[in-house]
Length: 258
Image (cartoon, rainbow, N blue to C red):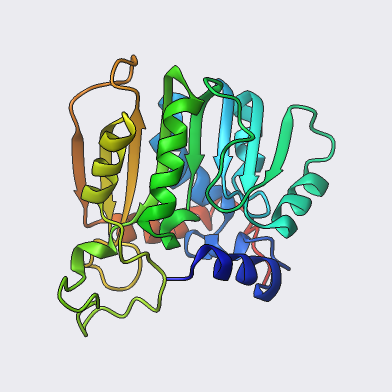
């Protein structure tokens, strides 16, 4: 997977942001379909709330939704291009603050200030050192009852430990971090003094039998959200995406540009 420096080169130099990232919602039919059909049902219990931290917002695909669900929104991204795009897009909003980081740091976020930390579809490509850095800091940044939702890779579950490679039948094309798994996320939570309370492992892509991604929810051990870990292996995730795409054609206008 790309290093932090390589990611910066991609997102601040090589990537075509002309569609503002909306193109990644095309399998759902629209950004709205992905948000209301896939994301919001999974986070609705945690919002609205006081302060939301969004890590790696891109050009604001989910920021536009999150800003309506909080009193204060903090967005942090490695890419200056993305942060500038968000500043332009949400220039009339007075409750959003914007920060360019080094791909790992949350030092600009006050300790004990975040009620809900969120990252979706951005951190699946980062290795465990980045996830570890964020979780270590989020242990300080979250309020006592703060909670987080991070979308990350699980492809490491299939990596051959002796070679560091995926088996020949998995064609990942570098889309997922090989060092990350659901188990590794739980280990990093424990090391940071956090508790992982739920994980949904999903099959994103064409290989329906490959559980390559995970949604992890975490909090402080003594928060109101703390409970024994619950795990769901969702082999039907891509069925959900296809169903939403068919249904939303009836009710929404596609927001991605052709």
